[in-house]
Image 1: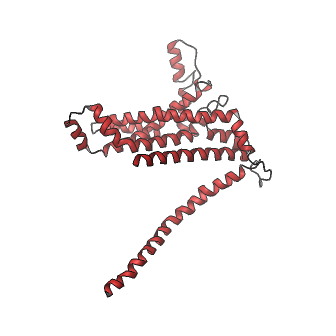
Image 2: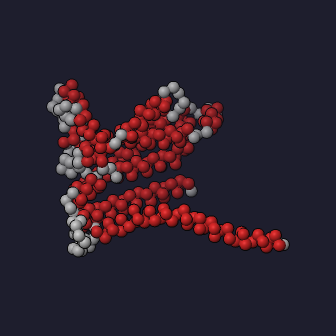
Image 3: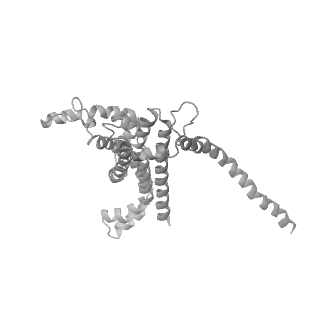
Length: 301
C-alpha cells in the first residue's frame, strides 16, 4: 500500500512535466510564427484599409475601397484567371508527367540514378536564371523559336511578345522546371511499396495495367494528393519565372496575382492597394490549403 501511495504523486506530476516540456518546445515556434507570419498579415490587412504610399503613417482611411477596386480592375481579373489556368496545367500536365516519369525511372536498373538526376536538375536551377535562358530560346530572331520558324519557312514568331502565347510559354517553363520535384517524391513513394504485394498480384494473374491500377496507384494516393498540393501552391505563387520571362506582359496577359501585386502595388507606391491584393492572395492560398486538408481527411476517413 505504501508503495502504491508513493507512486501516486509521481504519476500525477508526470503529465504536468510533459505539458511544460511541450510548451517549451512549441513556444519558440509560436513566437516565430506570430512575429513573421501572423503579425505581418495583421499589418497588411490594416494597411489595405488605407490609401497609403508606404511613407509615414497611413492616414487616408478608405475602408474596403482597395478590395473593390482590385476586383473590378480588368488586369486583376486577368491575373486571377491566369492563376486558375496555371493550376489546371499543374494538375493536368505537370503532376501526371511527374508520375509517369517516376514510374519509368523508379526501378533498379543501370543508369536509373543518372536519369533521375537529369530529370531533377531543372528544379535545382534558379528561377531567374531559368527565365533568362528561356528568354533566349523563345526569341523569334536568334533563339530556338527563330531557328524553327526559319526551318519551316515562316515569319519569325516572338512568343513572349504575343498576348495569346505568353502565358502558355510561361506554363511550359513551369512544367519543365517543377515536374522533377514531384517525380522525386513519387520515386521515393514507389520505392517504399512492398514488392511482395506486387508479386502476389502478378501470381494471381494480374497484368501490368491491373497492377498499376489496383496496387500501385492506391499506394500512391496520399503522395498524389501531396504532389498536387505542392503543384497548386507553386502555380498560385508564381513570380520569378513570370518576371524574368514577360514581366506580366504583354498588356498584362501573363500576370499572376503575385506579379500583379508587385507591378500595380509596390512598384507604383500603392502599398495599401498592394496589401489588399496580398490579403486576397492569402485567402486564396488558405482556401486551397483547407480544401486539401479536407480531401486528405476524407481519404483517410
